[in-house]
Length: 89
Image 1: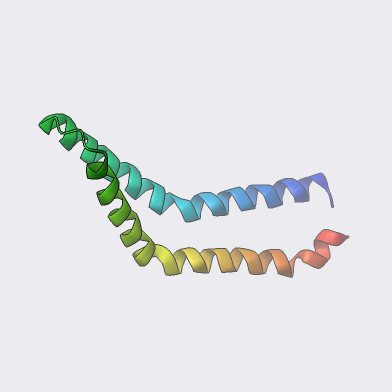
Image 2: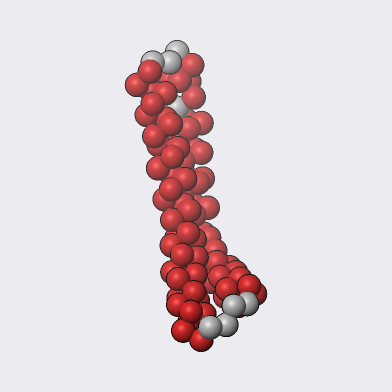
């Protein structure tokens, strides 16, 4: 294995992880900011008020984007296993 190959595999792994986690993280961030703004405007400081909407939004995103996320991970895994003989050399 050459250094370029190892760096390329690591880069591809990180990019795949970022691509798969981005929708969930983005929705969680957006919902958290909106709920925090509402809490600041109404001066209601309740922990469950921010937790429950974020949980529901994340579950909705996982339900909607879950097949795409799974397909992306399966495609990445297949490419890793297909290239395994070349990595050993």
